[in-house]
Amino acid sequence: MIKLDTKIGGRHYQFAEIKGVLAQANEEKSGDLLAQIGSQSEIERIAAKSVLSQLPLSVLRDQPVVAYEQDEVTRLIDDSLDPQAYARIKDWTVAELREFLLDSDTDLKMIEQIRWGLSGEMVAAVTKLMSNLDLILAGKKCQVVVKAKTTLGLSGRLSSRLQPNHPSDSIDGIKASIFEGLSYGVGDAVIGINPVYDSADTVGRLLEETHKIIEALKIPTQNCILSHITTQMKAIERGAPAGLIFQSIAGSEKGNKAFGIDIDLIKEACVLGKKEISAELPFMYFETGQGSELSSLSHFGADQLTMEARCYALARCFNPFLVNDVVGFIGPEYLADGRQMIRAGLEDHFMAKLLGLPMGVDACYTNHMNADQNDLENLTVLLTAAGVNYFMGVPMGDDVMLSYQSTSFHDIAALREIHNLLPAPEFEVWLESVDLLKDGKLTKNAGDPSYLPNRFSI
Image (cartoon, rainbow, N blue to C red; front, side, top):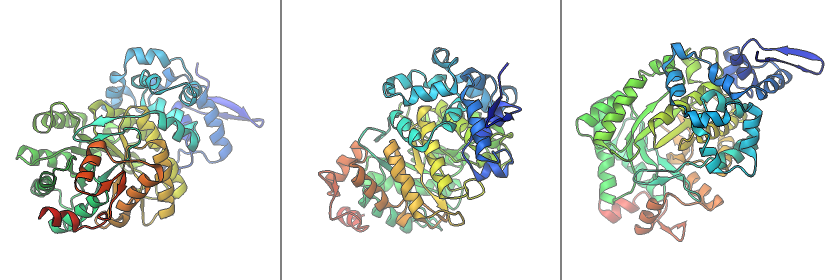
């Protein structure tokens, strides 16, 4: 019999189910309060954390927040667990997992030995027992290196997605942003565009144009148009030169249906990608964000952090090259302010890295959220300390198409300078070859959007 009660300060706290313990142990999030499942007081939260800390990890596998019988995401996650890795940790309590991760003697090799024994619920549970500093320390240990045309996640490196969105998908406007971003050393993770028009023609046109720039300048990077996965597949089938295939995902089957996808569709995209993009190198790109399941009423009474952890446990089954959390994009209904945004960003990075994902973060906020640029910059510094793989690079940090605030080209340059970091090694060599980087520092040509087109007559 699993004990789901505790006494604190002479008061008895009883929890009806593990799902409730997970929800009430979560740090305060406006989304959990909106769903009416979050703790109503700090002492109630502490009680839930106390109960959660003593739960064996096997119980969290046996009692997922969405039942195995009714959810294909639960089934894929559970069926993918490695029996030997699971046997190592199944009798640990959540508190013992936390101590293992924070122990100074625990290294990456030891973490890799248990990764595939962990479910999303287990990872969510240990996250709820950690402070922000704990998340940074443990996240730093969980290095994940991936290689396509560039190598991401190496020590001493910080990569970036060049995000040249335009409110009318103007090729000239997109090109101007690309050239400016490249001049700051941005784009080694991917040149990725969110299109205004979700059509195969638009996606094909943008893939062609970005591919032309990559080929003309011999840039070691990937291109991607972040439309619906079915639209990208149509464009690729027509011959469009894609470097990655993108899709937003959720932590439940119902949530994925709200995105217009299921696991079979992702598998179909993987087959196409192996045929048309690469049979050896990773090419999937997934995007997540706390609160998406609640927004589609597909959270099954579970808290948003736990559902987010399930996204990562799902994503790793498809060997992605990129995963990123758009941490403040969904809005204040789910993360009310800068404090909650910073906490969620650190949580999500740690959970994804622990599960073995090459995690980047879109440190961002919407204009109706109680957050500002200082909150965003604080989060980027903390995530860089935690070993994040990449950030977004948006002109002036203001996405004029999606209408939200993110990291700018010069933010990426500043973070690299502060932490003595470099872009991906292949991209570093290219930047040096075009006189944009020398001895690890940007040259006087940085920030000039006319430099590359003038030099190469594009």
